[in-house]
Every structure is written in C-alpha cells, then in structure tokens.
Length: 336
Image (cartoon, rainbow, N blue to C red; front, top):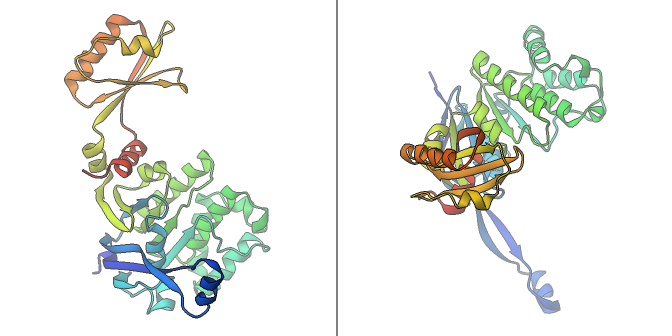
C-alpha cells in the first residue's frame, strides 16, 4: 500500500527575467534581441510527505513556497526534477490528478461570485462527479462543523472574508480528497474564525487521514496543527524536522515576564548585580518587563533570587522563546 502522499526529488524551477537596455538605441535593440538572466525560484529541493501528515511549509516572501505549491498542484512545470503526488505526475496526468487534491489559496476564490454558496457547491459536485449519497453525507458533516448553514443561500460577494474562507475550505473538500494544499488559509481572519478553521482541519485529518501541506506566515497555525516544519530560504530547504526539535535546538533563551508591586524603571532592573548577561525589555501589553537570558536552570534560580531581594514582585512567569522569535532569528542569523 502506498504510504507516501508527496515525493519531491531535486526539484528546480527557473524563470527568465528580462532586462531592458537604456536609452532610445537600447530600446530599439530590445525589439530584436532581449537580454535576460535566469532566476532560480526553487533550487534543488527534495522531501517526502507521508499520508496523513500535517506539514508546515514556511519561508519569507520570495523564498519559493508558492512556486513549489504550484508545481505540486500541476499549475507550473518544473525546470528539472521529479515530482510524484498521490502516485501521479501532476503535470502529465492532470485531469485524473485534480480529483485527488483540494486547494485553498487565501487570495483566490474557487466559488462563483454572484450565485448562492450552495449552488457553487452543487456545480463543484458535478465537476468532480461526486455521487449524491456520498455528497449528502460528507457535506452535511462539513456544513455542520464549519457552521455554514446560515450562509448557503447567500451569494459569495455578500460574505465577509471569514465566511468566504470557511466556504472555500468546504468547496476544496467536496470530493473528500486525500491531500489538501492550503496557501495562507487564515490570512486576515479574526481569532475566532482562525480557531474554528484550525479545529476543523484537525478533525478532518483524524476522521479521513487527510494529508495537509500548509504554507502560512501565522505561527499560530503551525503550532496548532503541524508537528513537522519544512523551512525554505532563497529556494533551498534550510530545515526539515519536527517543530519540537526546532524549538529545543534554537530556543537558547528563556523569557521571564515580571510585574512589580511598586513602580520600577528599566534602569533599576539593569542595575541588579548578576554574574551573567540579562537583556531587559518593557512589556507594555502586561504593564511589566521581560528579561531574556540563557536557558540554564542555575542562572534562572540565581536571577529570581536577586530579583526578589531587590524588588517586591506582583507576578512572575517563565516562558519558552516564542516560535516566531526562533524563526526570525534563524532567518536573520542563519542555522549555525
């Protein structure tokens, strides 16, 4: 039995970038011959995703995420390399292949703008040739879980962004595909809608073993859904492993959030005598301060003893470095 949903070997995608010559003479020459350079968007990447996995595929803008997704879904043809998705070549077996995937692009719609949501669903049911019985059972579950019943008679153009994204997700799953590609699915959504979508994705993963490849800038999506992270930078994979390993290897600091009974200045805190380095920042949100220090138990206990001796404390919390901070540090300083 096939256990691999996605297999990518030495995948490359290069684009031609044309450059214009300067001046009138240059513009005239451009009519006959163009200067161009080859720009690699994805540069020799390899990875596999097992069936049932939920994987975050992350990187800064221009890192090559969307280009990869477009190759995996058959929209773009690779310059070089080998891609097998659901046992097929996405570019060569296009029609058969599209019946085995669902795609949600945060910035694009697969719903018809001027007709009611349920009419869009019925049209997609015909496109994917979903039998009536299967459609009723599966869509009743999705409509109920995503709370779509009040939206079914509304035209798509009258939906809010959060409502539309829930409907887009339902549309991508009408044929119950074994593999779902999500490109920024929670972009611009409020916290409650994000939570509903995350909970729903967890449920379909458990219920149907749906494989999910997620690209996102929202670290909350990753922490809520994915155990594995593939990190891309300038078209190359710089990390492929568990989110937990990423945290334990690169979270070399602890954050200690402190609130004081009496008014305290950052200058007073910096004057506390300690045998190691502590970086202080104002925590405006919680009207307190944050101390950053090396993640070593003896240092933390020494720090707290010195702090208690110098000031009266109202509240103190020790936190791991946020995933967002870790990932920012990796992009700024590299993996070393």
